[in-house]
Amino acid sequence: MLSINKIGLIAVMVLLLAGCAGRDFVRPSSDTFKLGQTTYSQVVQQMGEPRRTGEALVNEKNVKTATYVYASAGGSPSEDGVTPARGLMYYFHNDILVGQEFVSSFKSDSSNFDESKISDISKGKTTREEVIQLLGRPTANYISPIIKQTSGEALGYAYTTTRKGFFGSLKFFRKILRITFDDHGVVSDVEYSASENK
Image (cartoon, rainbow, N blue to C red; front, side, top):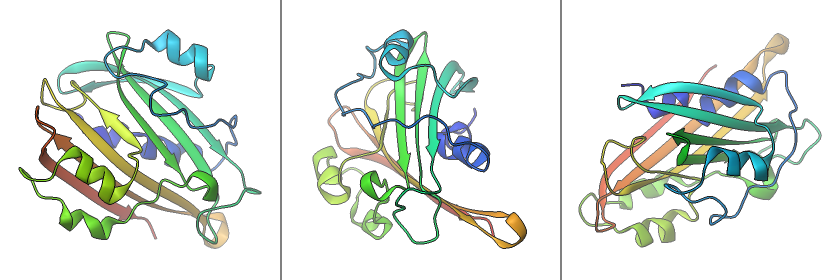
């Protein structure tokens, strides 16, 4: 099984940001595309041709990805010294949307979240509504086969930054939180990771 984090938007942004500006876009509203209903062609009709497409095996199922990325050295970043960028990745199984992710380090629509609040989330107790109240609007959501469960869903929060280092090198920071819910909308799993290259 290939981890979703290894094919996720943050990984793609790390590869693309150094040399590409891309085409700017506005994050669609949360009800623009529906998991389990929206098709690949409907996303492309709304968003235009993706910057990059790919395929991966996730939980033994073939998944297609479509990625949109934009970076602007002249934009207003969420943190000093950061090259502001935003990205969207859509996941499709049998041409149907099964996951979507948004990441931004622009001040206007930053996807940064407070990881110190993760300890307030309890498996088997915290509800979907309580998670959103605690962390705000999620920046990602997934259904099977992106998550192992055949029913239920997962919400995600992700943030990445790119800074210029010495001698033209780039420094990347990323953090990813994925929260899976059971059929009753109660937390069944919490996955968090953070990494930084120096």
